[in-house]
Amino acid sequence: MDAEGKQGCREWLRRVIFQSDTRAGQAYDIVLLVVIALSVLTVMLESVEEISGPRRGLFTVLEWVFTGLFTLEYAVRLAVVDRPGRYAGSFLGVIDLVSILPAWLELVLPGSRFLTVIRVLRLMRMFRVLRMAQYLGEASLLLNALGASRRKILIFFTAVLTLVLVEGTAVYVLENGENPGFRNIPQAIYWAIVTITTVGYGDVAPVTVGGKIMASFIMLTGFAIIAVPTGIVTSEIGRELQRTRVRRRCGQCGWEDHDVRARYCHQCGIGLE
Image (cartoon, rainbow, N blue to C red; front, side, top):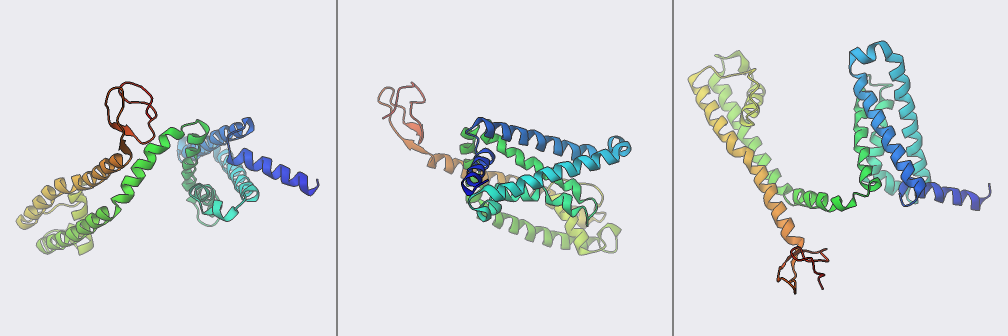
């Protein structure tokens, strides 16, 4: 094959693998999604001893077949894309690489193959295959809201961490010598985290009067703390919604609250200028 033929073949592969505007590209994406789903199902079933026990060899063969296919596909993607480094460093590129690493790590770290269940993240490609791009705007809104609230959430978690450190140490002082469950400060801090988050495993509990008073205070504090992150993110989502709207008045009904991408009135359906 001459250089022109190789370039044409490379361009055809690139279009099939990275785009879905052709019948071959759509078929490739659908087959890829099915193989990913089967791979994840295989990993999950392999963890069930009653199913995988008598068929250990079969599951091993299937896992290496899937690993070989995904490794080959990743290599082909790097070979046909215009900028391999940019693809490898992209979100989907990192997911593609991480999805095959656990199986190879199994050769040196037994048990790591079960981490290949992360391949389920590759199913996000269905948004492109099934023409669900209209939902990406809503996902972008949520991500923007989370990004805008990251500093507030970081400050909040720093404050909570400081609080549980103080409370855990206080309970350790109150319970030390009386309760073997609080034999050190890290153990007491663990109990404070479990208590303030209202999880309450019950594996450790205070027995002294002072410890019970402190536990009551931590429990009541936990109810107030849980609502804070939700309020922060909800507030940012509201602001993001406001930023994505523009006051465009409909000449027919007078409605003004329209999305920036709106072409027709939300109320009467007439076209907007």
